[in-house]
Image (cartoon, rainbow, N blue to C red; front, top):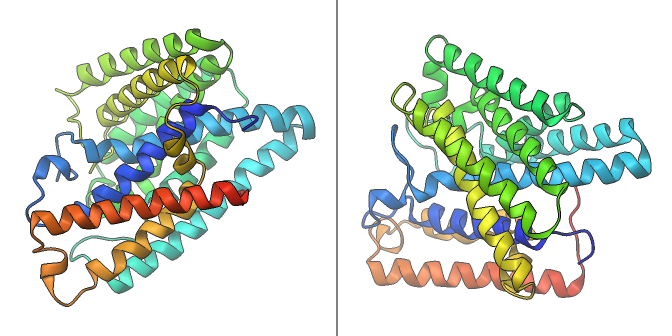
Length: 322
């Protein structure tokens, strides 16, 4: 598909499927804790999903901004990014309101979810996207420092009560998106295998800095801490680099996964619809108290349905553009 980067689509597709499987297992009693989000300090596979969406969104937005600025001019490109961000916040607000009404979680405010985090982060990116990558890195570092200072004070309670850190956590997610945009812009400037080297180098640097911060600021998705942001950025970039190297050598590989990655918003809604009958079932045997064989069967059915829907949408040529 012209204009698309196979490794970005594959990474986004993997994130969609991991999100769906993670949300399915979230309320199942037998699923071990290391496959679920950490309550506070720590890191699991599930904790990487939301940051990967931020990283791939930044990568896509950076490419789109360059194309739109060249063909439509800077004001139109910035207007597109701001409008896209507001639309994501609005869609996410409707989803979160529905989740809170149908399945409220005691002590947790569901008013701010993944889509709002991506939208809010995109608005913050719009403020600095025209600056040089190094300026964006400095701006993101200042945002993380300010966020940690506020987290230790007035914002702490709000962040801990809210999914994705709530509105305050958007500052940390925005820093992640800004950092990812700076790295991806450097990666887009070089061809082929050199792109993977840029991603690997930046990923390693983020992991080193994030690990160094961890003793001072614990790695915590629940707090959207600075160390969590940097470790997640590093892991996301390394996985992207590995996929990029693989797909440069084997461009036809992972076609089914790339198809999933082309329709993230549609499949996000589809997985919620597939989850609803299970999470709202009166009999816990179907979900929270389900035996392993049943949960695995439900996961297989859900993954197959999402992959199949992506294939149908791809063959039809249907597109949802924000």
